[in-house]
Image 1 (spheres, rainbow, N blue to C red):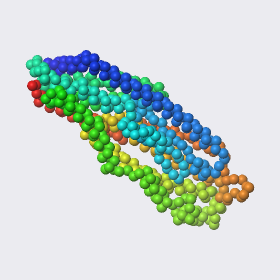
Image 2: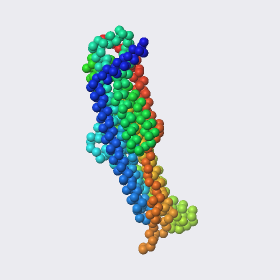
Image 3: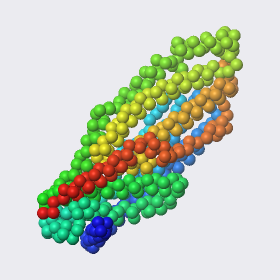
Length: 481
């Protein structure tokens, strides 16, 4: 009997919400805005992808068209590598607008990514991007609150709660029924969006359909859990409010707190608890450590003087010109190894600061489910900071390999004796440049991202348990009058 009553309340609540023309109009309007945002995102994604392909082709052509040169000069000529956004950035662009997309690679120096969208945009970018994820995370919850604020408070005012009780409905049935009915209606905003996202991202043909499908299948339960929380919050506040007007005011306050104040406060707190050095300070400290370890361009540097003496002793010669390989190239290779190790150490230290900021944000997801769903969404969409760090690592690995191969060319093909004036130059043929493979950015597997950022998923499960607890508690203490 209890199950049938609960089912009746769920069905009636859902039908009543669907019968209201303004509710359906709101749902259609929101879905249209979601489609519009995805259309704009898709055009932007395609335009950016086309530009990246053109620039990649241009960079590659310039690299291969360079004339015969000394390998070390070619190493300082450098190379540009590009990061291609994941197709699901059409749905949730996450941190992509704030992180660089291009890195200039050169010998002995590790540059940071540049040319972010935020860097070339105005101050409005701070208010967030107009994406489907933003609409589903921030706008739809506000709509749910407006639609459901009177589900119990208004019925108490109309004295219909007592009628439900006399017909055998318990307080638990009423709260569960209203919550599930409102939650089922809220899915009207979500379920039509994800299939459209899947189809649009497939058109981009930038990632396998299985990868996109898995990511969307992970996003669906996350948003469903998030909307269940919003529905439970709406019904519980309505149940404990003396009037529907007070319920509306309280729910708007909750929305402001959860969606705006807490996330911004957490971001501010994380930056102040774990401050990151400025770019200038980071590069200055890096340069100082490199100079302390040894300057490969300084022939009198103590570290490289020891290497020189050991080589002369090993090959039993008195001058570097008599070595069976190019001594300068050998020194450059050793210098590259040292500077790369120092850079990786500094980068790991900086990365640890950002990881602490991210962990602080993830822990705060247990205080605010909005933070949980946002962090989970950008992780599943491949637009989080972890995916960006994989780009940096791939670029550095490519840079180091390129620099060391050029050093090997110098070691193997360039004589120690400087060419005489008018004699043949110390160069290698241009065919060597074509042997270097182009850089291809690889998306971070979603399984790897989730393993590294599992806490938002745990926070969503935590909020589900909290909702069940308070619904059960509120059902036993529901006042009918």
